[in-house]
Length: 493
Image (cartoon, rainbow, N blue to C red):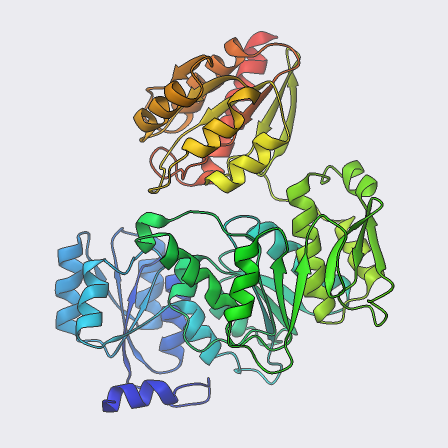
């Protein structure tokens, strides 16, 4: 190992000497700024390289004393890095392994970390060192992360959702009070660059093809997700209905004594969470789990709260297993579940217009998520399309063609979607939306959907695709859908 590599390997605490370390931070979003702010506080020499101007954060970088460079092309970023000659690069999740900057660093043995790896090494700033509960999966990560944090708080612990949602991890780690538990939503991008993390408990909720363009293939995507279980201390939570998540646990190098805890919508085995006679139950942490179960909450109660869908049941069971691993009592779990409100844009019910139900599932950015929504409905006018990310939606269309009243196709990859619909759902009427961006797209899509729908049908925005071709993100796409529906309702009055 070189002297720099030896130094980086030894930097495993906030209280170690980070001074003078040359660190390039790639990206100036909220996470990128938190990385720069943290490393400047530690005395490192920091240079932030970013592709889009951000006047507010640029001013803040100047205030804290970080160097910065606006480099709007890959070539410009690479040239700036070569001149800076970093000893460490902390990179945003948007940079895949095949990006020129990453290839350059790999060829020169320059360490490339994400903010999660950096955060693990800096987790001990305050005497109150938080346990980490880490959650990944193709779908359900955000809801399960929020649910888990909500349950932990109900159990009297100071906890927060961080990572891919909420407060940037490094900002939470610098909170002067500290936390008992941090619940991290982790994408495959983030896990790709984790090297030393050891979670208290971990979960991969499910696995389906996604982000294949970023990872270069399904196996690489799967392997990145599997890293969530490495070095888990207490509980590896997995989905009984998804054998690949069980294999991940079996293959993981965990801390001795860590238990495998399953969840599913069937009757649970010992060391599992599941459903018995319409009741969600815990046989994972009951001392008499071979013969008995703790009752958590009923399916009817979830339905009354508007969270009775199967995918929500799975999220709740996974979160309950994680929270129970940290000592939250069953009654506290139930209280948390029945006071929880999911985020917008995930199977969000928008009401009826002219006898037709409208559902905003814009957060369904992949096939697995769209499948869950389509499976629960019939008579669907499906708004579909966007950036497919290298994933084939043919099986999804073939599986659900009989449920479709019609399809409305949006997005940059709509030619591919149109071709799949023509071949695998030939009797389904299809409308193509040619508007290019934002609200205009959804105005046209909503009007076409309303014209195609019949009383009793459901118009479902569940695109099975990423949103960045025509919208800022999935939330922007969902808001545009809701705004267009409001306009339609107003015009009809």
